[in-house]
Length: 446
Image (cartoon, helix red, strand yellow):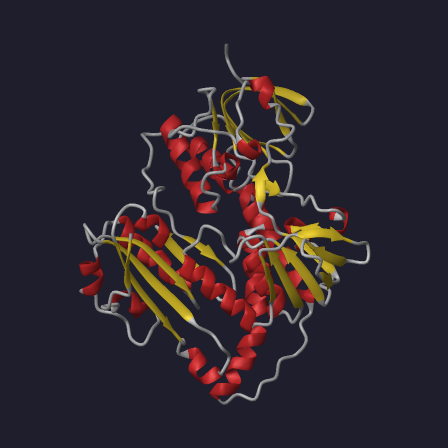
């Protein structure tokens, strides 16, 4: 039977837009449905506005740092409403760009759901498609403690009219540590409650330890190994050990889950996994061979560039000359904490599980802080497979870490060895040169 569209994409975020745009460019008849603002999580309630807030939080400390270099500037008062208004203007501009990228596609600004494996109901009408891509991303995980109705989740913070003086964050992952640094940098009292002994479960242990130490020096009050038991209407937080925290705002930062509710996946025969995620094969196909899923909805590597790569590859595979090949087995990531983290490849624990591993580690005070007198340390680490001498992991906690690790990730994806790093001449004076001047092995793991 003929279909209304060659491809129907559910979700107008980074991955969905890239897939739709590339497919339309290959000559396919494409439709896209997005119920919220164009650009998805990253543009609206994720990477972009969050990093604008990170930048805002850094200016006060920059003023303080400048005094060590002879400036007499004094830190003033931060105006939250100005930041939010300017952030909203920038996000609105980006929404428009994403919408214009869909010029060659039919767009629906509504929630789409399956009626059957080839039929979609959207904006009060039913349409059919030969192939369908699910790219709806994720939503914040709601807390389950008593009094959860008195807490906000990460999406809410981007639209608050005011930022109160005392904030308690529950969760030690990406979102929790990033906003702890943001709020502390904006002069708020911050309590960070998390279940593990260190923040950022799954990251390299040296970076986790370094970040915990850095947050403590910023005045962030850490509560490791704890959970929230109750939150009262008066915003009094009671932890599982009976300790109470008087606060003005409770921010639940427990991560995000695939937003697959009310998509009608049962009607399409699409199977789901943990947390409502959609399992896919190496071609992004679900158990229904003409239905695909990309991005955070698969709950694999929940990073915007990965969603874009998956969308681009899928469009090329279905309608173009063939798939573009991306290195999705070794993907760099950043945490915009204070200080930030950049990481790529295996952690020490992961590498050591595969056999003997050489560890190179440097901790030092970055040049800016030798005069600023603000306690700030940088940690840089290389993980080297002892048998092959290939660098299988690089990790950094410190200023400009994400910018530096992006370049290092190219070398690791290319299979560079420790000798390749050693014969590379560094740029002096920089922190980045430490990655090519680590000569002394700190230890052997595994």
